[in-house]
Length: 277
Image (cartoon, rainbow, N blue to C red; front, side, top):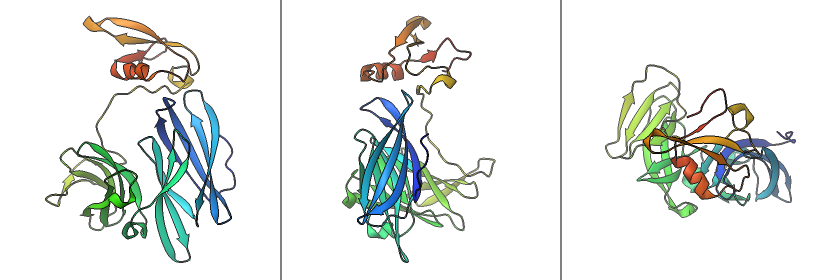
């Protein structure tokens, strides 16, 4: 990893660049001000070929820090950007497009932006939505109905978790929202009935994620049995339980059809000490 420059604040994120058919790890750093603008530097790690690159951008006005981990959606990384001047706090959303490698800023309504907020995504009515909420005893959840439109924010619900602090995890198809508290409770909230149900887990550790289990294939390099930058064999299941060996290309210019076939088939890496299903 490149050395960290003298910085005011930094954050990281992981997302998928569909234009390169590759995963990218992004570390962003806020540098010193210049002509009432702050420079943002991004160190980008390309997972397929194992190389680093840089990208720069500028934001106007005072920026005091980047809060939380990056949230990936629609090929874009998102972070909460804190702007703190004197005693006034203001928050917005800093975005980084993984394909164009360009920074932009997304505004939120004043009723949201004046308080510290947490950024996440929820799948509502089958569509993934960008969501912000205030992580305190009264958890106000806001959803962006139309991605990229600052005018489309609406208040989804208010969840009262008593004396605890809430983390919004995910939503079910019926609209119920899963919430984890700092005391390790997993709660299910119904926005229609406003009922909050405690799901007993048998432990007291706060949760970071609740969601469906989906199989995927990610090539992570030498330490996981695959070899970046070289050809390797996989076994692809065919009818009647037969296996067909396939040589996958070594270039990052794999076609989308190849990637789709890899995701749809049951593929297992061979030639290693352990097969990864």
